[in-house]
Image (cartoon, rainbow over all chains, first blue to last red; front, side, top):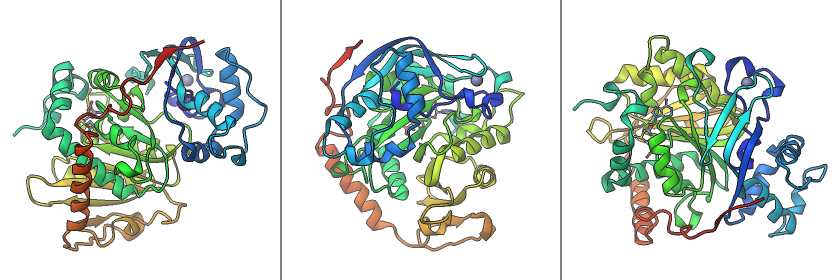
Length: 127
Length: 280
Ligand SMILES: C[S@@+](CC[C@H](N)C(=O)[O-])C[C@H]1O[C@@H](n2cnc3c(N)ncnc32)[C@H](O)[C@@H]1O
Ligand SMILES: [Zn+2]
């Protein structure tokens, strides 16, 4: 699962919907991999304003990745393949969680990740 | 002919065997690809977007979302996230090394993304399954409403969703579209080849606040067999019979172009051999 996805995913459990601590989910025992892909500049510019930067910084810290700058890059910094764009692409679209789990900060529910696929099926009483 | 939806729950129906049969059938590949292109033309995306694929299966629709504009995907390449209730289907998507992120999840349990995540959503041949509740504690209407409420919240204002589905009958068609309207969507039903055994139903959904202001008539107005179910225009039926030749021809041409390049039959060609390595 790409770190991009983790910046949008929330806990699926009904009672967590209204709790701010149900986002972001926290990776645990995560094994990361890099899956290379072409840089998509237009996509990066599109998604930039929707990122929750503070949460992204938190997650990269939890994963032991290099510290991110305090503020998100500005749209102007994402000019034709600038280093900033390449770094952002590497972080959001190429860095993936291959194995491990995602844990809700509110209810503690653990979502297993296997071969990059997170299991979000809930037992009936939690829906 | 019996409907698979009436025989088994989807995760059991799409087991390893059925999932492989489904994905490798060139007849199914062609139909799913045509419908995905049709749905994309209704989404009218102009630039690379973040798209949710509901009931993504083995990624037949997703592969098209990942293709570039030159290869026939308007506004592409898009980035997509897909989920499906069948782990066998997802296993095949993994094998094919599709570009999108995959999840094991049940649309009837909701859509677990924060508000305003997606530019658009697509669902091809999946949501009729929501009308068959798997257990006694669940009702089709409860599952439909959880799904559409979640979908509505996860789309950004001005976003759109197109769901092609196979309603069992008119009653089911109505049950699905009214659940979408109740969740807040502007909604319209578009039918291709109505009345034939190739009939295809597309539920076109808009989230207010964008350039169309939730007015679905701006999307499907003047099209063949359109049924406008926008809340404000209570079930007004626009029944214009117009041939969609241009649009179909376009799809077929693109399909042929893509097939020539091997994009559909050999979908991973562009990325086979890309590096996959463990880091950190
Ligand atoms: C006919 S296949 C279509 C797959 C893919 N969209 C395509 O066009 O090839 C229907 C898919 O819907 C999935 N499905 C059915 N019910 C579902 C649910 N409640 N949540 C998620 N996926 C579901 C099935 O597992 C199956 O993969
Ligand atoms: Zn939770």
